[in-house]
Image (cartoon, rainbow over all chains, first blue to last red; front, side, top):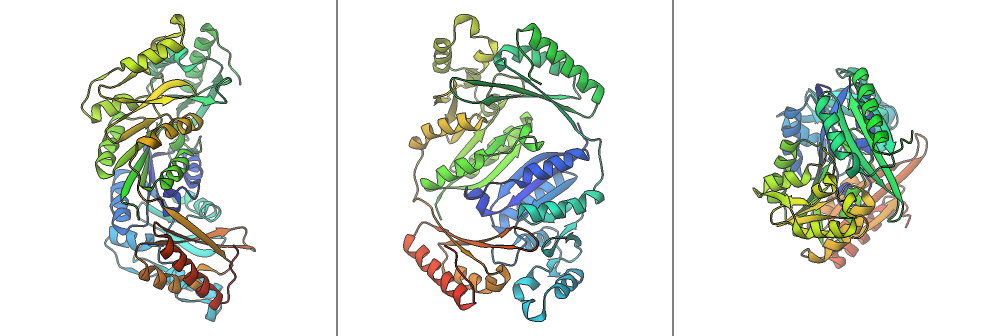
Length: 247
Length: 247
């Protein structure tokens, strides 16, 4: 699998309380897989300084990249930029470039304390421009700090893709079968043991108690030839076991 | 806030790759908040034994409860039960009760190795019954092991709610305003500083570059009277600042 690894840190009580559905992980993971970067772990933490700093430091040291979302707005619960400054032992201060951008965008009477707060970042932060709502995110070494609002995060994410180191694009192939997992489990394990550079996942779907939704078998890797061979072997196994393949 | 805390460990490459949208966190967090249990952190990890065991041990010691989803099926990538056994230093073995349930459900020729694997658990596991697809989950001390398929997880989760220790139900009140966050940020911080047992969160929504979607201000706590007071103070502040309240 890809040697370039990353993690995502989602900051926000609204996710942990069950009020909001988290959807940034899926977007980021999909975009990263296109450029050969694997997401190895995700953590969702609440707006508590100590927790955020602890997780920032653990994850930025463990993987090539760390992406954070949430907590960079103007209100009291937006503490991500301050936490990143502390994690890196840098001053938390007004970024001149960000200040200029917001100063130009807002009229003098609208450039209030909350908006000035959004220009405060670690001393050596590099801006990530925001094509939608102006207030920028930033990156510092391997940590990329993005907003939590999905549409804004997505627009800004596309601005950082170009500065990341690319790995080999990760390829996924899925086949769906009407067989129960337990019927092909042993054969699938044997195929997995033969191909160490592919990862075979098996995901049953559920429709209702009376209607079985089938199983998606997903083969992941960077070597197209091997993936095709694995898919062929799995398909043959399923047919030999009396199953159908639905795609 | 509630003194009973929990965490969720999501096990599954399909989430980290961006192929599947994670939706179990929202369900579990919502159900737990009804019975006064706060979710303090969530981690999503891949199907790697060392990683799963490390996170199991960290999270089960840190919070009152740990809920895991995923990785308890019959295939080679289902390694959660084995990992929980190792984390607790217990034998990974056939659970007699689970074996009986599956033996009764399946005809002899269909009770294959894959299905027998689903009866293997830590030695001292207690079953969590599965009203939909029979194969049970289990709990051990404060760790609850559930499947990843949302509908099945949800049906099983309702079976464990009754054995958890309840805290004071967590109350959320939301007001929506047409003001930009930066306009009320300072006033909101002052109100937050006055009420330490309530948590005030501010969540802007985004419709399009030209249309502002307003901000949801969410007050969370267990003391209804204080929450009502906080909501009143916020509402007055917003009106004083020239804003509207939309609910």
